[in-house]
Image 1 (cartoon, rainbow over the protein chains, first blue to last red):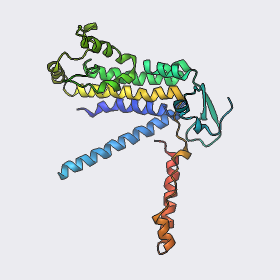
Image 2: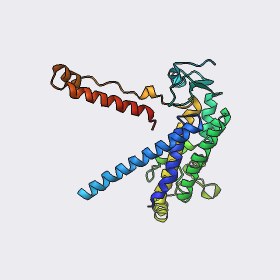
Image 3: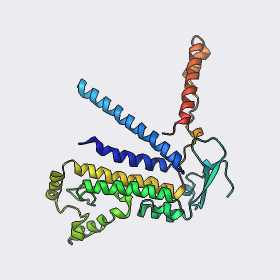
Image 4: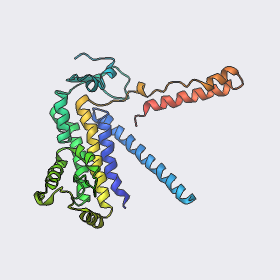
Amino acid sequence: MNLWYALPLLVAVSLVYSATRNEHWKPILSHAVRFGVWVVGLMLAVMVVLTAMNWLG
Amino acid sequence: MAPCKDWLKTIGKPFWTGRRMSTKTMPAEAASREAETLDIELRDPLLAAFLAWLVPGGGHLYQGRTGKGILFMVCILGTFFYGFYLGGGRVVYAAWNVEDHRWAYPCQLGAGLPALPALVQAQRARTGRGPLWGGFMAPPRDGQELRNWHFHLHSYFELGTAYTMIAGLLNVLVIYDAYAGPMIILPQQRKRKPREGPKQDRRKRGGEGVQDNSQGKESQDVNSQDVGADA
């Protein structure tokens, strides 16, 4: 499965989530960028844990 | 409407008190500590929520919040229809029988009108009538047909299901935003209470006072960093 399929989902979720917590464009966009980075970091952390478990197991 | 300093009390009020709220007063930016406020005209919140469910972003367009309405419409409908396309037009259907419990459909239904044809098709299938519109959003006739869909679409069936489900679930947030305004997180809400208990007790007993003080300072610094981060 191509991981690029996660990209449009990430963009849409970040924008919608941040737009439900702010009213103006500037805070919406900055919040969306921070949220997107946070999600990518979380997914990378989960990937590292799963890879480590696979490697150890 | 005069700006209300204690605007946090307005959050959730319509849910619990059943009162209609036509405007909402809140700080302009979550990160701002200034007293700057903005009034949002929510008009009829229940109608706005219904429109937001029916067509994602429709509630915001009704309220005159055009930018956000278009953003929600593009993001949610784009996600929904892209998932529908990935799933070969088969991933949005309603069925609840022995062979297929389509639990994904209640989530997809959050997207509103785009998912409603599946209800019509499910009702026709339940009463033994043939599907309309060439089988658009119709449930599979039996387990064999469902297995064929999975066989031909491979993982795209699950991928399309995930996209359409997420689109519907995102619209739940949008419906709330149309009903009660944005759920702004103020920096004050993110402050943690100072820890009490064993560490302070140890300090009182002596022996680790200097170390505990440094830990306390570090904890405060972390809190002040958190204040700046929304995500």
